[in-house]
Length: 317
Image 1 (tube, one colour):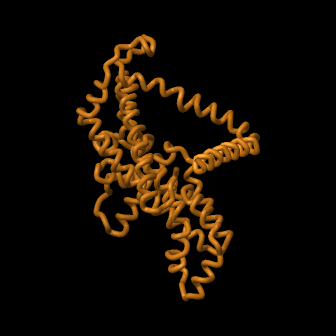
Image 2 (cartoon, helix red, strand yellow):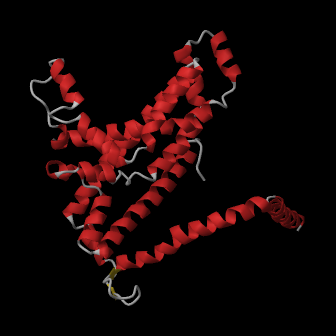
Image 3 (cartoon, helix red, strand yellow):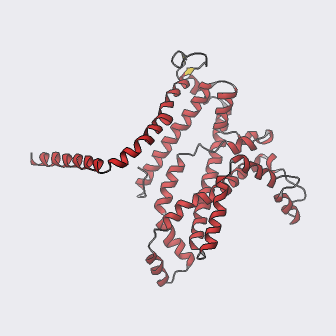
């Protein structure tokens, strides 16, 4: 009886503490209300449209006056070779973007952290951030000019150094496409992705570096044994978040660069949704493909979060 009484008292105390905290933070809660309402309005209310995936949707009828077809659209998706092919392309480009993006951002952040000249450091940071603010249309135009067979700088340099005998049509060869997409993503986002790592590095206790120096560690050893372990938690959290976007390989760069010769390797799930949902007016099939992406993303986030906890690393939730 005494144990039960203590448990009830502890529960009551926790509830009281929770409401006390709510009262103490009522200004912050009131400030967040408009943002929560906007999130509900634009992120959750539209989920009613997911019902189209279980219908043979016709635009002339109301949403709930449609013919219900159950899981027929999903069955068609997974029996369609085009969709399965697009899943392969999406996964391949997503993994390339994830690996290249993580590795390059961490390396650049560590190198920037080691710079002692603040003017040079800030200049490099500014230059690396700038491509993030360019639209993909501009980036694709730059990629096309750089890789052009007529006046592209890449072909020009390869010819000058005797690596190739004639210009290579990089944008017309399927075997180069995934690498080009990965390189374009790195060039555009690597500077922006370093921001959170640099913020994490700024909180590292300087005495750790001093102790490492006393033990005879050089700059490279400090990076490996002090800097990297200190930002491990940040790396794990960002990795969990990015794993949830593993089916978001992108849309703009694949759509703009995916001409006829490379269409077999350029089409992603997003392009599939556009093709069937908008161009062929099969909104139900496009919605089913979108639901598939969302469900897989949720499963991957929770799986990565669970695995991280089991391994003793930082968890997102």
